[in-house]
Length: 148
Image (cartoon, rainbow, N blue to C red; front, top):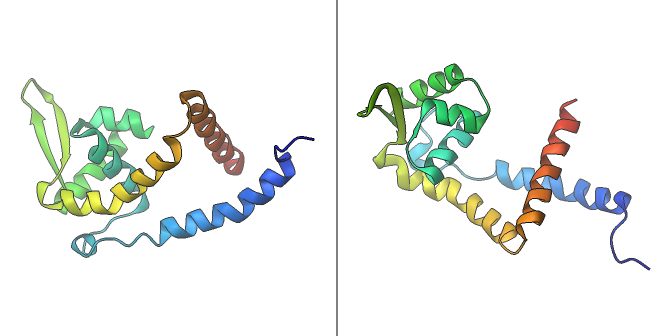
C-alpha cells in the first residue's frame, strides 16, 4: 500500500493550504516607514529583485519580471518620484539606467520582504535541485491553469 497521497487527497490538502498562504501574505504588514508611499502588488516583485540581486538595469528587470521594459520604466519612474528607488546612468553605457533601492528605505524593505525570502529558503533548502525545479514548475502550471 502506497503512503503517497492520491491526486484528489493532494488537491484537498492544497485547497486548505492555499487560502492560508494567501491570507498570511496579505497580512504581511507594510512597515510604518513605507506606509505613506503608494505601493501596489506589482511593485513587490520589482523591489524583491532589487533587494536580492542588487542594482539592476531596466532591461534586466524587465527580463526577470517578464514584462516590457516600458512597463518597468513606468514603475521605476513612479517609485523614483516617491523616493523609494534611485535611478542613475551607467557610467560605462550612458544609454543604460541602473536602478537601486534608496539607501534610506533599504532596511524597511528588507525587513518587509526578507521574511518571505527566509521562509522560502527554509522550505526549499532541504529539497534537491530537481525537487525545487519540480516545485516551481508545478506552481507555474497551477498559475497557468487558473489563468485560463
